[in-house]
Image (cartoon, rainbow, N blue to C red):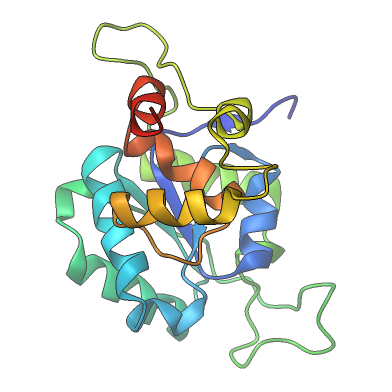
Length: 197
């Protein structure tokens, strides 16, 4: 594989190792549920609903019972036309970083081969290109825009981010990097600069 595939949908995974694994294959937004943490994190659930509305969600969880509990919870909270599901097969073994196999003995997303993951994404029917309504590429808010607006690299950056997070209704604990990953679904670059004028 020579490059990453660009995915329009926000990709939802269980944990950070799944995110790291998919980040090597996908050019797109990847969000973790923090396992069962999604059940009590209202801010993150509100953000996922917004992302579902603006770009759609793609859920790819482990094939064990915990993965299906998380998947079914998301399915119950998101309209069916705004969520897609990618499934990995039951493969028994253990991930290299672990001392022993999982409770059910199955490999998770992080342990899947590139071929298996790409096939799961293909079968889920992900959208692989993002353009504006007019068919032109969308002007994305970048890290440079964050710096110019004072959202990063400045003495008051964290308080400016806190104000923007509150305005957008996003989780208050989001880092600058996490905010940069989702902000393009909430506002344009022009709206960002207007917000700080």
